[in-house]
Image (cartoon, rainbow, N blue to C red; front, top):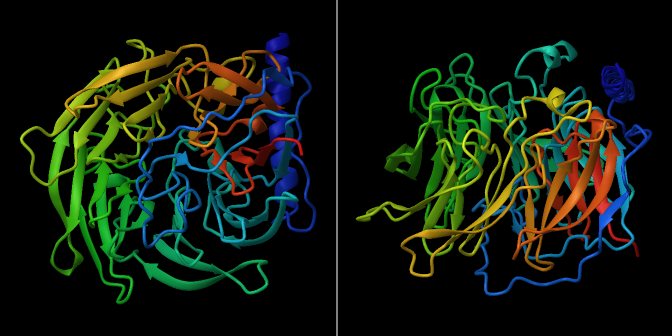
Length: 499
């Protein structure tokens, strides 16, 4: 009875907080913290000394994106999830939060260090946020779901319609909306809102039910987009607005649930629930398949996955490699060669996590020849982490062999449970930053740091307790100020070291 009572109270608290945020409109007038239940150890472990990771070739700066680390949920065109700047070390830490009633799933930073984020929820929009004061400066409303939509199955596992966006080289946000429009939004002169500069209307080419998932420019400036249903892959000429579209399947075949990666030579890498494909632009910008591979698939839609395929956005690595996870059982980290033509496309397939207890729905961290993967097995929505429940623990590191002809498992951590976070690596500190769930009845959530070299837990810092602190697939970000940021169901949270 105690567990059910606490779970019901937690659910009521989440609803009250979301309603409060909804009633404040944009939240611009009054900044309020996210409410929390009592309980949870504040700090576990010990602060770290920085141990920089050296010898990692830098990710090439994409000409059409904001500076690497600032442009979107996976940091750069290669989707590396790696920073050259430092994050928190765990010294005299402070946690702040901003109640929005919308989850800031994708966080970017403009040249002034301000947060630009898409935040689906009861107040869906593109937000401009002062990171120092954790205060909303401006908001551009985006199409979203009504409150009743969040009661339907699958409401918390749909990444379409603005969950992904990118900040371009002119600090403009480019968003694929749920209404079938690609919006180009610039900050206004007063930095208290956004102005619509361009609207690419795709409603004439998208079929009913085809929701935009992600938009990115290739290295030549052509805009590419994907929509989940029917495996839609398309391009937009940014000058003329001309659109070219192909479809990789119908219904559940060829489904695209995540974003994609863009290389330095106009190459684009897209994963469906059956294949990994390289695209290049053909005549008139038509998407053309350069190569395609079918990855291992058990056919299972595992708990923690959005569909019955890979849960990863492809990650590019120096030396001509691209990596995903497959949907085998046990799941594998799989690396392929990116070259147009090669005698052997697959470099390796390395199993991670236990059979019947492993999958991921988040991008791999890519650093040099190293890949970090987390286990999301068991997450079916916010209810899976209520009342002391959590998901199957697991992080692992896989490295490509020095000769480039295979891979090996470096370490596994089977003690830390990260239900859904997009983790990040700081090369400056040598720490992997994650977000984990404790199994106490009060439902504590923790900022968590792992050692990149060993995988061992370094420290954990309580962020808050209760369902509003569930990040539900949002991507962790490290700001230019050295603080860490993360969207949660209640809004946005921040962790920084003390001064």
